[in-house]
Length: 155
Picture 1 (cartoon, rainbow, N blue to C red):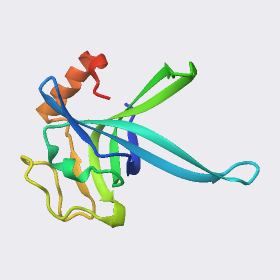
Picture 2: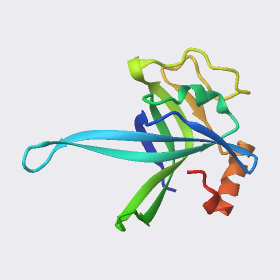
Picture 3: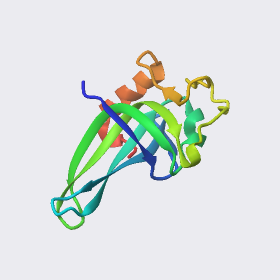
């Protein structure tokens, strides 16, 4: 098993779609790092990860807005393709299993969760978390649906 963990900012507000009767929350996370090249020039590199969170617990949606900082954990998927300039390119994607809100613009973390039908929201912890567990039948069904039809991924 390969697991991917990322802390970064949301590039735009999340989008909720329904695919084969299951909810999927799509969002993109960017992680930026600064470094100096061999000549001593300051450089910045950004890595974007397209994320799909299959869940029936959509209570996290109001908090997944552009600029918010999150921690996401899941399984990586990579895709190589030819871009418009006919050059090789790649996309990094993640099938999210866990999301934690670790702050955002102004260091905000939600104090109250909207009613969402019982999601994993822990108000006593410093970071709010939402999780799909392996025992969740919706998650298992969504994963099997997605693995059966890889072309139907909502990215």
